[in-house]
Length: 289
Ligand SMILES: Nc1ncnc2c1ncn2[C@@H]1O[C@H](COP(=O)(O)OP(=O)(O)O)[C@@H](O)[C@H]1O
Ligand SMILES: [Mg+2]
View (cartoon, protein in one colour):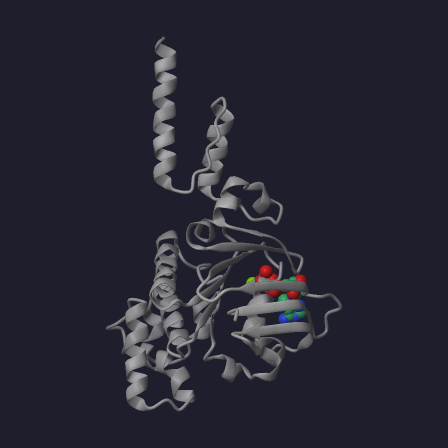
């Protein structure tokens, strides 16, 4: 059974006359970490909202094709029913936090499912521990930094004990350190709980560093897919959909242009710095001769 399976999915928003998603077929394995990359308006958010039933149940529109989450057809399930399978985290932390305290925020979902009190307390503690926010229970979510808010939003999704987490540009408002922290939490969730992670992004840096597989979207379609290594090797595949390659790809290209026979494809900073130092030494030695 796949974590997510989409077959020939099309979605057109009510009042629009063109497909926002135009024939999406994709399968995601349980425990896989998949990044969906694409420029603005390529269809990433619409795809995310189809995984948890927000489209077409809440967002009105015309849908074709079939979406299955852990073997269940989403058209027959409500957003509430899907919430125990799919946790959703959005771009703007402020738009998804609405309670007076961090604890209430994280307890909100299971409370609505009438989970027993002791169990809720245990889940809140577990979820806050996972995102490194234990001890913030009584704080107002609005007094937190952007990164902390996003971690509380993840904890609120996790307290439903979902099998899959879908995040729509969750790092958008974060600084580089906040992004790294966020992705480290996601990596841990995958490693320790086998959670399936699907993440929409415009930026390639973290997608290349953290995911198992990357799919590229353009004009409501999936136009390419591969491993991070594939895209590090062929950064132009990212450029064709308007995604900027990683800084390491650009450094690789720079060195390859400068060094005769150079064929670098750096995935790690350490590899790049070693090559740069060696290139410096070699050109100095060459100059002294
Ligand atoms: N609420 C909406 N009503 C009508 N069209 C929409 C709505 N939201 C998104 N779209 C359209 O759907 C397409 C895909 O948008 P979206 O899924 O938001 O892409 P992305 O998340 O990659 O920026 C775009 O053409 C966009 O204009
Ligand atoms: Mg979007």
